[in-house]
Length: 493
Image (cartoon, rainbow, N blue to C red; front, side, top):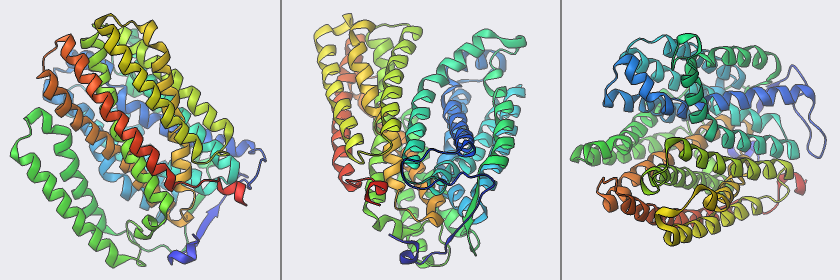
């Protein structure tokens, strides 16, 4: 689908180095590789800071006196503004320049990280985490959008494959890095280096990004849709907050009232957007008429949902169901991430040649491995060892690793360049909402079976039940992937 078919303005790209590569098997220039490295580093900072705090929480509590509610808000204060601001952040890049907005977001994130490292009390730390989330919401949509408009053909598929590999690495590196830095107690700073390390990395992204990332924006772009921005943010808060906090409040009536209000505001937002089509809407609704984008985004939502559901209950199963220590449980996550890295590497090396068949095969591998894992759990009960579960766990990771990069690449492939930021924001929002839904389902499914008990048998039964849910979600993902192209665009050229 062309830009003119959607009635949008053409894309304007200025390059400082030869980063825009032509379709085909040609190799990327050095400047393009540096630009890609900077973009992936920005994504890595975001992924790490979602989870790096988890293993440092006991030390943070000891030094700041943070209570249970404050501890929970150390993660919520980060994730909430990210989910709320992604759509707006993406559109800001379309209008004012994706490189410029990425660098502004990096400045906010880097300053906020410094404030986190200097915080002496829970209030300041939570406020700084909130500011980190704002910076990420502005910064991250520019990553996929810039990759989409800068690279073409096989080079774009390679770039998205590496994006999937970075996500796989970050899944395990966050908790491990948090534990290592906290345990090392560098210069007597305890947990603070987990945030302070972002400062030199952020400065490197600023310096190299300004030099090597090409600027791209929409010619003659109109002003930002402020009403749409407020409505979309309100709708996401009203839906995401009760999903995040509902289980801690035993799903009180206000949770369901907020969810209903969120759906109502979402309807108002969509009606507002329909009225602004052709007048710089926050979301270009015609994107959803492109089957591979709408189907890919739905698959991405389910991907986030199954990740939120699987990883939370898997942690409980490993430590409560099998009685593993936190260190042994971390080793299990390493095994999974090794598999993810292997799958993502295959996706990067094949450079999109198999189109939708690659992520579909990945889903089938993950489904078969989860079925095998469920049979293992049933036959070994509490006696299942890390060594025995290595094969299915690595294969689960391998299958999932084949999904992330190709799913993003194929979903965004036909998005017009001038809507790349908006589409990237929507795509990122989908997985964040999915993770929130998965976390909410975790609380309901797990509590329904265990009743909150640490009993090993109950937690094993709960996890097997979750595997059935995850298998169903994988089956739906596999079906939705038929919306993705059967053949890569650069093969059809």
